[in-house]
Image (cartoon, rainbow, N blue to C red):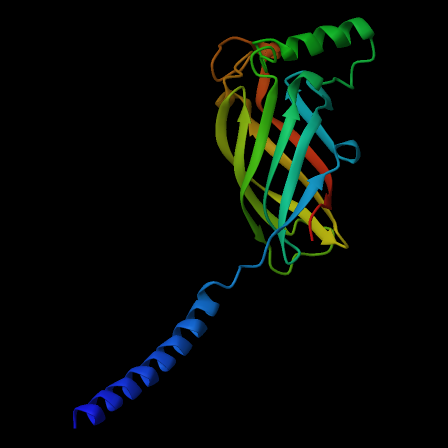
Length: 219
């Protein structure tokens, strides 16, 4: 009887072990399955442009800023994230043709009245959310983008529509971003902080326009 009981117990244990092992193997295979890897697209800085435009009561100024580096994260041809770094010391003015006057304005923009380039030579933008726009017309913005913009060491959230394409390992992104300079401690001749400026007032909002090209760096 004892021998029969022992054999029965051993058989039951083996059956339970086999059943349990199969279940754990299947479960672990499901749980351990690696998620789809997002593809990284590196920004081609030489083929990308960043333009700025600022207006005042009596007119406007515009120019360019160089992009130091950047990348987009893409999952199944959908942009899911990205980071961009800008060289604020590269800022140029394109509307003033006189070399002396041009240099004077560029120097002023680099001063503490504006971007304080000596202390804050870089700026950055990080995408926190990119939501496709359903049924967007061809050539029109097809994403709503949210992210954090850092200027002069101060970070604020911004959001804007963008036109983004991903095809054959190349991603392009175009957008116009409206920035309130006073949120970044750029208050020079702001009518919200100084009275009686008259025609010397500079509007608080300026526009940064991106035209970015990036290529896939991983498979």
